[in-house]
Image: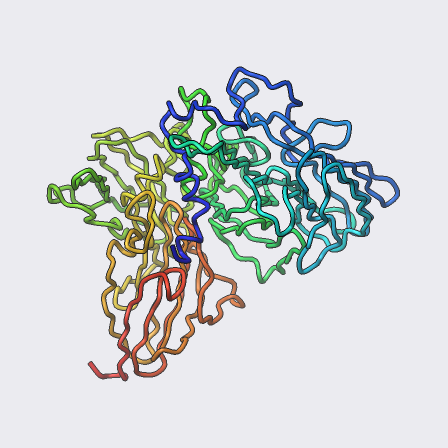
Length: 626
């Protein structure tokens, strides 16, 4: 399997490794599972909200003594199922997940003692270093061994530390991403008020079993899985500063509903790049690579219920819940999700001119044993058609004009539609039975039902709409489409404006033939003229899609100019030319400008790299030649 699929294999593995097995098989024995209602007699993990630093501080020195202990981790409720695992504790205290918070100001000296209490395994300790550094090679500890760390913390930033079971170059058995905690260095005098959220994941293979090649998995933010994660309750107009630490070995595109957030920094275990004001970009989704950090700032401008979550469908599916968990009345999501309840206050939404009305139909098609879904403007789709109308129709909105979209569900399954990236009222945000404001709620649309959403367009740019219920089959089935918001007087011209929607055809693609680009395997040839500027809008909306652009002219790299992300223009100094764009993850959009400067044959690539993706040939003619 080539690069594009490898890039998201960590998501696919959650499915293929047995996470979505039948309820009967899921009850089978697993050495790491603590069934609901039972207790192994181990110390209980304390859920760490990262508000209270660990250690003892005195006269510029922080002393902290850490030890690994076997523990009982309940990622939902105290009486629900748990996981038997190793966790980090301060000596003499209960173990915690995330591991104890280390938070000090610049100039502080750290004196840390770490003890390996594994009886039969070496551990490698990372993160007890002065920052910045290019990399941390780690310190190995044999069973029963301790190590004393003594260092100055270095530059302010958002970092973390973690312990890895096994040698630095040794083979890892299972995954131990719960052995990690935040390491924050504040500037002298401290930082503005903020919150710290750490993504910890535990994923351990079972004893080999022909019928249950599954895993016990815990996907958590600050130690808990949705809907048991902490509720954030700001007021309209509050300034929220968050530090997000991805301590896991997987990437996570982190998506905020209803609002933009400014990315203040990006870093990792050993260094952090803090952006100056002119370098801060506004986004609704930011792809965090494995073991990276970001700091962000945002202001809730409207009341209601909102979400901040990983946009990988496999990381928020209710099917990732632990075996023996009570499924009755459970929410339609689980895993890496934070709920935000914004208190009532004034709205920033603007409505100008006559509203627009659109009817959107959710259709279902069948072919043998497969099902496919698609949105359309008309409902009389040909019976028996398969993969028709994917992506859904382009919705053109005008900035500050209200658009009322009535969705009619003609499918045999319930659904709900999220208007991804738009700044709208919560009740229209489309998370069924969660999005709510002004006494209204986004419903579950059962078969035969309909609902009218009110879309507000506060800025022009590239957006998307998609199902937000049973995401894996519905997104892979085709329930998504592009949206473009135009400025007043702006006209969408498909001759110069091009949309590329990357999705999946099946829930578990194994080759490029099972990915979608604009619903087809073969991209049409294009014709352009020298000096013309073409806008290329890339949308990533598979359950775990990643994609990028690149271009060549007569076989040589040809630069594209970055222009916008998630519907917001990039800072001017980031609107630069590049031979190959960065990856965007599921739930992200990126806009580039393609301006050919001489006649010839150009090839636009969409995918991961030239070995895995789609090619589109552009014939560029001299000015005036047809």
